[in-house]
Image (cartoon, rainbow, N blue to C red; front, side):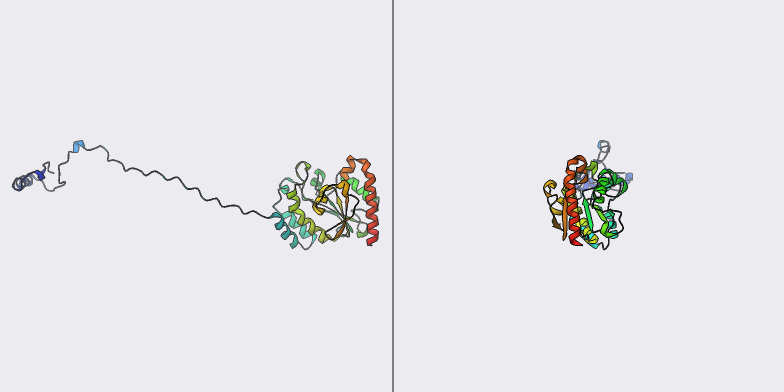
Length: 268
């Protein structure tokens, strides 16, 4: 039982008399200093105000370190101590997107001990399918051109053989021209390829090969003029695919083949 009187407004004696009366009635505890009308109490206690939720702070984005793909290629290529190791290193190289769209790695064909190394541009559809360079119509024409000066990619003797590779080992989509960044990325593999094969002379077939090796284009001006790169004599020539489109240019190609044969004679 609890009191409903405001005892603070009464004098001492009156308040004591009222308290004694309440004790006689059975009051046992004093709960509040002032009366409280429970009929006017709110049905629910007021809820504490929620503080405005702070927006979640996004995790800081860590910048992805840029990879110097040419430097990475240089390091990987230099670790290769043989042509087989170089091919395996190139197959494992993950920085060139061309790899994801190609069927096969096109590394090389012919006799690695050959005196003549031919560098083409990039694999086409037939090369991508077979995994070898110069196997389509242009490749068939190249074989006939080489046979005219007694050279053959299948020859077991290095004196009569040729060794063939490309600037790019994977086919670009729709046979597009290689991009400058792709050439720069894969050039260290090409340089190491030449170093390991150690030919006497190099033939550059077409503009892309001249760009990658000599840093210049303009095959109609460059062809037939001996240059030097990778420490080797280098002869730019028209690509066989160009000769298929322009048969009249075969005359110039024949002159370049004779120049190649003469150069081999001076180096023997």
